[in-house]
Length: 113
Length: 114
Image (tube, rainbow over all chains, first blue to last red; front, side, top):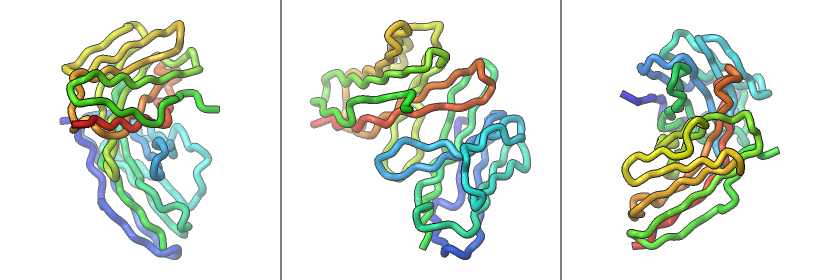
């Protein structure tokens, strides 16, 4: 099973809303990632969790708040977003023991109005 | 500073012929490389990877070649099929850094013509 699941698939939120994106994997991977992707651009790394601890924050604004409740789950809490934050948000996971393939979820299409 | 580059933004190939997608990198510490295929509004799909201890890895119609001295890798798809039409990204990682960070190239849009 190489599946990473993300919910919701689509999300529309106003600039004053609070919402959360969810990601789940059951591959036993110890690293999990959030990426943001705009149209015709490569995925842009936001956060990396390694063994449930935040290991990389790519200078992401505090209106994005990641959370890793356990080794299978990764959340991204959203608050007071701007229209320019509208993008495809991708979750990914990877192993760190001999195989470094990174697997992506289908993404959440976020629109901020 | 773009550490991973895909200099061809687009490529058109006739069905049945070979598609060659190229990727260059600048960081000599990168030791693991991946290729992804991406359709619009979907997450990237992992295709194939290669470690720097190898110079070739093959999986069905997909072969990745790595030239460490030139800091260059390429993805060969043969024979190309219309369903291969998508954006292809290469990604690189320094697995010794412990950061689990992957750097993506800018992508190449492949169009396979029937």
